[in-house]
Length: 338
Image (tube, rainbow, N blue to C red; front, side, top):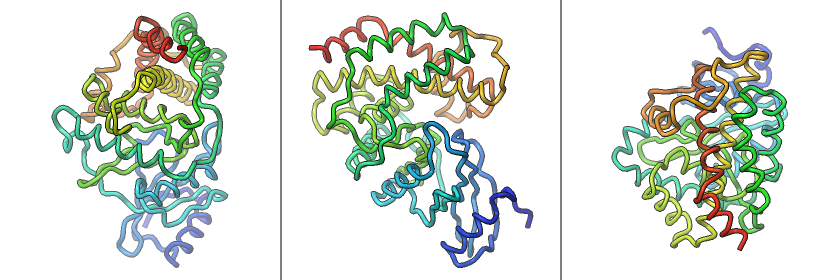
Protein backbone atom coordinates (compact mmCIF):
# COMPACT_ATOMS: atom_id res chain seq x y z
CA UNK A 1 0.00 0.00 0.00
CA UNK A 2 1.33 3.42 -0.94
CA UNK A 3 1.24 5.52 2.21
CA UNK A 4 0.48 9.26 1.89
CA UNK A 5 1.75 10.04 5.41
CA UNK A 6 4.96 12.13 5.17
CA UNK A 7 8.08 10.05 5.73
CA UNK A 8 9.37 12.56 8.30
CA UNK A 9 6.31 11.86 10.48
CA UNK A 10 6.26 8.06 10.17
CA UNK A 11 8.08 7.29 13.42
CA UNK A 12 5.73 9.53 15.41
CA UNK A 13 2.71 7.97 13.70
CA UNK A 14 4.01 4.48 14.47
CA UNK A 15 4.34 5.43 18.13
CA UNK A 16 0.77 6.68 18.09
CA UNK A 17 -0.56 3.52 16.44
CA UNK A 18 1.33 1.29 18.85
CA UNK A 19 0.02 3.20 21.86
CA UNK A 20 -3.57 3.28 20.62
CA UNK A 21 -3.92 -0.10 18.92
CA UNK A 22 -0.81 -2.19 19.66
CA UNK A 23 0.05 -2.29 15.98
CA UNK A 24 1.67 -0.09 13.36
CA UNK A 25 -0.21 -1.68 10.48
CA UNK A 26 -2.67 0.50 8.59
CA UNK A 27 -5.35 -1.09 6.42
CA UNK A 28 -5.51 2.19 4.49
CA UNK A 29 -4.69 5.88 4.75
CA UNK A 30 -6.33 8.60 2.66
CA UNK A 31 -5.70 12.36 2.92
CA UNK A 32 -8.63 14.50 4.03
CA UNK A 33 -8.65 17.74 2.07
CA UNK A 34 -10.52 21.00 2.35
CA UNK A 35 -9.48 22.10 5.83
CA UNK A 36 -7.84 25.45 6.45
CA UNK A 37 -6.01 24.83 9.73
CA UNK A 38 -2.75 23.68 8.15
CA UNK A 39 -2.87 20.32 9.91
CA UNK A 40 -2.30 17.11 7.95
CA UNK A 41 -5.48 15.04 8.17
CA UNK A 42 -5.87 11.43 7.11
CA UNK A 43 -8.72 8.97 7.15
CA UNK A 44 -7.12 5.74 8.36
CA UNK A 45 -8.41 2.25 8.97
CA UNK A 46 -6.94 -0.02 11.63
CA UNK A 47 -8.38 -3.49 12.09
CA UNK A 48 -11.19 -2.59 9.72
CA UNK A 49 -12.29 0.44 11.77
CA UNK A 50 -12.03 4.03 10.60
CA UNK A 51 -10.27 6.82 12.50
CA UNK A 52 -8.89 10.28 11.82
CA UNK A 53 -5.15 10.84 12.09
CA UNK A 54 -4.14 14.46 12.67
CA UNK A 55 -0.58 15.73 12.19
CA UNK A 56 -0.24 19.14 13.78
CA UNK A 57 1.35 22.03 11.88
CA UNK A 58 4.30 23.89 13.42
CA UNK A 59 3.26 26.00 16.43
CA UNK A 60 2.33 29.60 15.66
CA UNK A 61 0.89 32.61 17.49
CA UNK A 62 -2.54 31.06 18.06
CA UNK A 63 -1.69 27.40 17.57
CA UNK A 64 0.05 25.23 20.17
CA UNK A 65 -0.49 21.42 20.27
CA UNK A 66 -0.18 21.30 24.06
CA UNK A 67 -3.08 23.70 24.51
CA UNK A 68 -5.02 22.37 21.53
CA UNK A 69 -4.85 18.76 22.69
CA UNK A 70 -5.88 19.74 26.21
CA UNK A 71 -8.92 21.56 24.85
CA UNK A 72 -9.77 18.67 22.53
CA UNK A 73 -9.66 16.17 25.40
CA UNK A 74 -11.91 18.39 27.53
CA UNK A 75 -14.41 18.71 24.68
CA UNK A 76 -14.34 14.96 24.02
CA UNK A 77 -15.00 14.28 27.72
CA UNK A 78 -18.10 16.48 27.37
CA UNK A 79 -19.16 14.44 24.29
CA UNK A 80 -18.83 17.50 22.05
CA UNK A 81 -15.77 16.28 20.14
CA UNK A 82 -15.04 12.80 18.76
CA UNK A 83 -13.39 10.37 21.15
CA UNK A 84 -9.62 10.85 21.39
CA UNK A 85 -7.76 7.57 21.02
CA UNK A 86 -4.30 9.11 21.27
CA UNK A 87 -2.76 12.57 21.47
CA UNK A 88 0.87 13.53 21.96
CA UNK A 89 1.68 17.22 21.73
CA UNK A 90 5.45 16.67 21.54
CA UNK A 91 5.07 14.51 18.44
CA UNK A 92 2.17 16.61 17.16
CA UNK A 93 0.04 13.53 16.50
CA UNK A 94 -3.55 12.74 17.46
CA UNK A 95 -5.97 9.95 16.56
CA UNK A 96 -9.72 10.42 16.94
CA UNK A 97 -12.82 8.42 16.13
CA UNK A 98 -14.03 8.96 12.58
CA UNK A 99 -17.38 10.73 12.20
CA UNK A 100 -19.24 9.67 9.06
CA UNK A 101 -20.74 12.99 8.08
CA UNK A 102 -23.82 14.14 6.25
CA UNK A 103 -24.51 17.50 4.63
CA UNK A 104 -25.73 20.05 7.14
CA UNK A 105 -27.38 22.01 4.33
CA UNK A 106 -29.42 18.98 3.25
CA UNK A 107 -30.25 17.76 6.74
CA UNK A 108 -31.30 21.17 8.07
CA UNK A 109 -33.40 22.69 5.26
CA UNK A 110 -35.84 25.55 5.65
CA UNK A 111 -35.50 28.51 7.97
CA UNK A 112 -32.35 27.31 9.78
CA UNK A 113 -33.88 27.54 13.25
CA UNK A 114 -33.35 23.85 14.18
CA UNK A 115 -29.66 24.11 13.30
CA UNK A 116 -29.24 27.34 15.25
CA UNK A 117 -30.96 25.73 18.25
CA UNK A 118 -28.59 22.74 18.26
CA UNK A 119 -25.55 24.95 17.79
CA UNK A 120 -26.61 27.18 20.69
CA UNK A 121 -27.04 24.13 22.91
CA UNK A 122 -23.62 22.77 21.94
CA UNK A 123 -21.95 26.12 22.61
CA UNK A 124 -23.64 26.37 26.01
CA UNK A 125 -22.35 22.91 26.97
CA UNK A 126 -18.87 23.83 25.75
CA UNK A 127 -18.84 27.01 27.80
CA UNK A 128 -19.80 25.03 30.91
CA UNK A 129 -16.83 22.64 30.64
CA UNK A 130 -13.76 23.00 32.88
CA UNK A 131 -11.77 26.07 31.90
CA UNK A 132 -9.50 25.80 28.89
CA UNK A 133 -5.93 27.11 29.19
CA UNK A 134 -5.60 30.86 28.74
CA UNK A 135 -3.65 32.37 25.87
CA UNK A 136 -4.34 36.04 25.19
CA UNK A 137 -7.09 38.58 25.61
CA UNK A 138 -9.13 38.07 22.45
CA UNK A 139 -9.26 41.76 21.57
CA UNK A 140 -5.51 42.06 22.09
CA UNK A 141 -5.20 39.27 19.55
CA UNK A 142 -7.21 41.30 17.04
CA UNK A 143 -4.83 44.24 17.60
CA UNK A 144 -1.97 41.89 16.73
CA UNK A 145 -3.66 40.89 13.47
CA UNK A 146 -4.33 44.52 12.59
CA UNK A 147 -0.67 45.38 13.16
CA UNK A 148 0.37 42.49 10.89
CA UNK A 149 -1.97 43.66 8.13
CA UNK A 150 -0.68 47.22 8.34
CA UNK A 151 2.86 45.96 7.83
CA UNK A 152 1.92 43.57 5.02
CA UNK A 153 -0.33 46.12 3.23
CA UNK A 154 -1.95 43.21 1.39
CA UNK A 155 -5.02 45.36 0.70
CA UNK A 156 -5.17 49.12 0.28
CA UNK A 157 -4.51 50.58 3.77
CA UNK A 158 -6.99 53.40 3.15
CA UNK A 159 -9.76 50.86 2.48
CA UNK A 160 -9.12 49.14 5.82
CA UNK A 161 -8.66 52.15 8.08
CA UNK A 162 -12.42 52.78 8.69
CA UNK A 163 -12.76 49.27 10.14
CA UNK A 164 -9.57 49.62 12.18
CA UNK A 165 -10.73 52.99 13.50
CA UNK A 166 -14.11 51.56 14.48
CA UNK A 167 -12.41 48.72 16.33
CA UNK A 168 -10.28 51.23 18.23
CA UNK A 169 -13.48 52.96 19.37
CA UNK A 170 -14.98 49.63 20.41
CA UNK A 171 -11.91 48.90 22.52
CA UNK A 172 -12.46 52.04 24.57
CA UNK A 173 -15.75 50.59 25.83
CA UNK A 174 -15.69 46.80 25.55
CA UNK A 175 -14.13 44.89 28.45
CA UNK A 176 -14.61 41.16 28.92
CA UNK A 177 -16.20 40.47 32.28
CA UNK A 178 -14.57 37.72 34.39
CA UNK A 179 -17.83 35.73 34.34
CA UNK A 180 -17.73 35.76 30.55
CA UNK A 181 -14.34 34.04 30.31
CA UNK A 182 -15.21 30.48 29.23
CA UNK A 183 -13.84 27.49 27.37
CA UNK A 184 -14.07 28.82 23.84
CA UNK A 185 -13.54 27.12 20.48
CA UNK A 186 -12.92 30.48 18.75
CA UNK A 187 -13.35 29.13 15.19
CA UNK A 188 -16.83 27.64 14.81
CA UNK A 189 -16.94 27.69 11.03
CA UNK A 190 -18.74 25.10 8.84
CA UNK A 191 -15.56 23.03 8.36
CA UNK A 192 -15.31 22.54 12.13
CA UNK A 193 -18.89 21.40 12.71
CA UNK A 194 -19.84 17.88 11.63
CA UNK A 195 -23.25 16.21 11.47
CA UNK A 196 -23.56 12.41 11.58
CA UNK A 197 -27.30 12.13 10.99
CA UNK A 198 -28.14 12.30 14.68
CA UNK A 199 -26.14 15.09 16.23
CA UNK A 200 -23.46 17.76 15.77
CA UNK A 201 -19.77 17.32 16.59
CA UNK A 202 -17.15 20.06 17.04
CA UNK A 203 -13.63 19.48 15.72
CA UNK A 204 -10.27 21.26 15.25
CA UNK A 205 -9.26 22.75 18.60
CA UNK A 206 -6.05 24.37 17.40
CA UNK A 207 -7.18 27.93 18.24
CA UNK A 208 -9.23 27.08 21.33
CA UNK A 209 -8.46 28.83 24.62
CA UNK A 210 -10.14 30.67 27.48
CA UNK A 211 -11.98 33.56 25.87
CA UNK A 212 -15.06 35.77 25.92
CA UNK A 213 -18.28 33.75 25.58
CA UNK A 214 -19.48 36.11 22.85
CA UNK A 215 -16.64 35.02 20.55
CA UNK A 216 -18.31 31.65 19.87
CA UNK A 217 -21.79 33.15 19.80
CA UNK A 218 -20.69 35.73 17.24
CA UNK A 219 -19.03 33.07 15.11
CA UNK A 220 -22.18 30.93 15.02
CA UNK A 221 -24.31 33.95 14.17
CA UNK A 222 -22.03 35.16 11.38
CA UNK A 223 -21.62 31.75 9.79
CA UNK A 224 -25.09 30.29 10.33
CA UNK A 225 -27.40 33.16 11.28
CA UNK A 226 -28.38 35.83 8.84
CA UNK A 227 -31.70 37.15 10.08
CA UNK A 228 -33.28 38.45 13.27
CA UNK A 229 -35.19 35.23 13.99
CA UNK A 230 -32.06 33.08 13.94
CA UNK A 231 -30.11 35.56 16.03
CA UNK A 232 -32.91 35.70 18.58
CA UNK A 233 -33.18 31.91 18.70
CA UNK A 234 -29.42 31.65 19.25
CA UNK A 235 -29.43 34.03 22.22
CA UNK A 236 -32.64 32.78 23.85
CA UNK A 237 -31.52 29.14 23.57
CA UNK A 238 -28.02 29.85 24.83
CA UNK A 239 -29.07 31.98 27.81
CA UNK A 240 -32.30 30.04 28.38
CA UNK A 241 -33.94 33.43 28.93
CA UNK A 242 -34.70 36.68 27.18
CA UNK A 243 -31.34 38.41 26.62
CA UNK A 244 -30.67 41.62 28.53
CA UNK A 245 -29.81 44.84 26.75
CA UNK A 246 -26.17 44.41 27.79
CA UNK A 247 -26.04 40.86 26.44
CA UNK A 248 -27.50 42.04 23.14
CA UNK A 249 -24.96 44.86 22.97
CA UNK A 250 -22.01 42.57 23.63
CA UNK A 251 -23.30 40.12 21.05
CA UNK A 252 -23.69 42.84 18.42
CA UNK A 253 -20.23 44.28 19.01
CA UNK A 254 -18.50 40.91 19.03
CA UNK A 255 -20.14 40.06 15.71
CA UNK A 256 -18.27 42.99 14.18
CA UNK A 257 -15.04 41.84 15.82
CA UNK A 258 -15.67 38.37 14.38
CA UNK A 259 -15.94 39.82 10.87
CA UNK A 260 -12.65 41.61 11.43
CA UNK A 261 -10.99 38.45 12.77
CA UNK A 262 -11.92 36.25 9.82
CA UNK A 263 -11.14 38.94 7.28
CA UNK A 264 -7.66 39.45 8.71
CA UNK A 265 -6.98 35.73 9.13
CA UNK A 266 -7.94 34.92 5.55
CA UNK A 267 -5.82 37.74 4.18
CA UNK A 268 -2.84 36.82 6.37
CA UNK A 269 -3.07 33.22 5.19
CA UNK A 270 -3.24 34.30 1.55
CA UNK A 271 -0.25 36.63 1.95
CA UNK A 272 1.81 33.88 3.60
CA UNK A 273 0.93 31.41 0.86
CA UNK A 274 2.14 33.74 -1.93
CA UNK A 275 4.80 36.05 -0.50
CA UNK A 276 5.11 39.30 -2.43
CA UNK A 277 1.97 38.66 -4.48
CA UNK A 278 -0.88 41.17 -4.18
CA UNK A 279 -4.47 40.69 -5.39
CA UNK A 280 -5.66 42.58 -8.44
CA UNK A 281 -8.47 44.14 -6.37
CA UNK A 282 -7.00 45.69 -3.25
CA UNK A 283 -10.12 47.49 -2.07
CA UNK A 284 -13.24 45.99 -0.49
CA UNK A 285 -15.39 45.60 -3.58
CA UNK A 286 -16.72 42.18 -4.59
CA UNK A 287 -19.52 39.75 -3.72
CA UNK A 288 -21.27 40.55 -0.45
CA UNK A 289 -20.94 38.30 2.58
CA UNK A 290 -24.53 37.02 2.46
CA UNK A 291 -24.00 35.69 -1.05
CA UNK A 292 -20.74 33.98 -0.17
CA UNK A 293 -22.15 32.51 3.03
CA UNK A 294 -25.04 30.90 1.15
CA UNK A 295 -22.63 29.48 -1.42
CA UNK A 296 -20.52 28.00 1.37
CA UNK A 297 -23.52 26.51 3.14
CA UNK A 298 -24.76 24.94 -0.11
CA UNK A 299 -21.33 23.54 -0.94
CA UNK A 300 -20.88 25.79 -3.98
CA UNK A 301 -17.81 27.51 -2.49
CA UNK A 302 -15.02 25.66 -0.67
CA UNK A 303 -12.40 28.38 -0.04
CA UNK A 304 -9.71 26.05 -1.35
CA UNK A 305 -8.66 28.36 -4.17
CA UNK A 306 -6.42 31.31 -3.25
CA UNK A 307 -8.61 33.85 -5.06
CA UNK A 308 -11.73 32.59 -3.28
CA UNK A 309 -10.10 32.99 0.12
CA UNK A 310 -9.05 36.53 -0.73
CA UNK A 311 -12.58 37.32 -1.93
CA UNK A 312 -14.05 35.92 1.28
CA UNK A 313 -11.59 37.82 3.48
CA UNK A 314 -12.40 41.02 1.61
CA UNK A 315 -16.15 40.45 2.13
CA UNK A 316 -15.63 39.93 5.86
CA UNK A 317 -13.69 43.17 6.14
CA UNK A 318 -16.38 45.00 4.19
CA UNK A 319 -18.94 43.68 6.69
CA UNK A 320 -16.75 44.83 9.58
CA UNK A 321 -16.39 48.28 8.00
CA UNK A 322 -20.15 48.66 7.83
CA UNK A 323 -20.78 47.18 11.26
CA UNK A 324 -18.19 49.22 13.15
CA UNK A 325 -20.06 52.47 12.56
CA UNK A 326 -23.64 53.66 12.30
CA UNK A 327 -26.65 53.80 14.66
CA UNK A 328 -26.62 50.13 15.75
CA UNK A 329 -22.93 50.35 16.60
CA UNK A 330 -23.43 53.58 18.56
CA UNK A 331 -26.40 52.10 20.43
CA UNK A 332 -24.41 49.04 21.46
CA UNK A 333 -21.49 51.16 22.62
CA UNK A 334 -23.83 53.34 24.66
CA UNK A 335 -25.36 50.27 26.35
CA UNK A 336 -21.93 49.21 27.63
CA UNK A 337 -20.80 52.69 28.52
CA UNK A 338 -23.89 53.36 30.66
